[in-house]
Length: 356
Image (cartoon, rainbow, N blue to C red; front, side, top):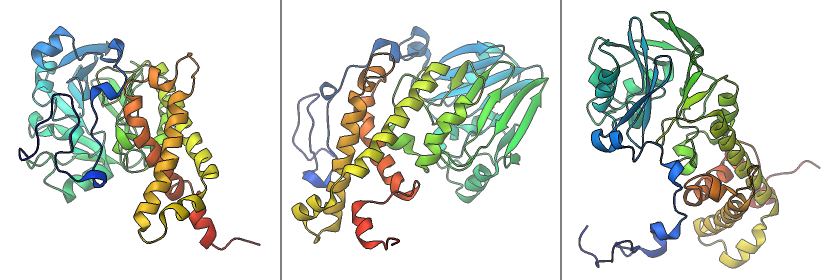
């Protein structure tokens, strides 16, 4: 990786010389500065010193963050219940719990099967009860190299739709409402404390990570914003980035997502496929398709970032990183309109038989 020209710090480089076949490289100067209030715990003295930050949200429910990945644990009268074990927290999760209580970890809940959120689950030892949706168990059994090749503890208890966990009189409601970020991604709700864990849907104060947080079902991911707001919560632990969220954060994330969906539908209606056929021809179908979708993506991105929202800011100002990630969400949602919403492109309208 060193056989390329040296570039000045901060200068983008095409080190592999692959031009348009590769991904563009940008610098911080290409994007808006991140507002200080979006950094959450990232630069707090304890997180800088220890590599993590832990705080009690309400009545035994605690939030832990590495500054990029978040998790949750609940202290009960009969041990500690942990929700997720991200590798970027790793053994710091144990340290965070130890700061709060000497009680043992008795239960571990997997939000979903993705290794970036549960890959450190082995730190809790063999005696912990592991609870998940049945789909999560199936994926862990299917791919034993999850968890960085170390394997992950296979869930000992699973469910298909809803379950209530009662540990020492502390109740947690486990709900599966259908495919969203991934099949099996569940919601973990503490009704007394009014705290919800809903992982990989929103990122409080930020745009979600690219392609709707790398979601496997975009329509389900968009709908999950409504599901979050069905709960009576005061705090939501989301898995990213560096603070827990409020109801206002969830409302903002839903509005941002819904705007992208609506502008994507608008782009579908307005895009003129013949222009791209005349410009690119049919000989390389992927160039034709890429330009068609990239044009619509740019339309959606511009409309979304420039929209003035209900607090007087546009989305580029309101959500940190929106100017970085919106184009990826727009592209994924445009594809989802074809695959998951049933909309038809101009190309397809020309070849799909229409009812007379």
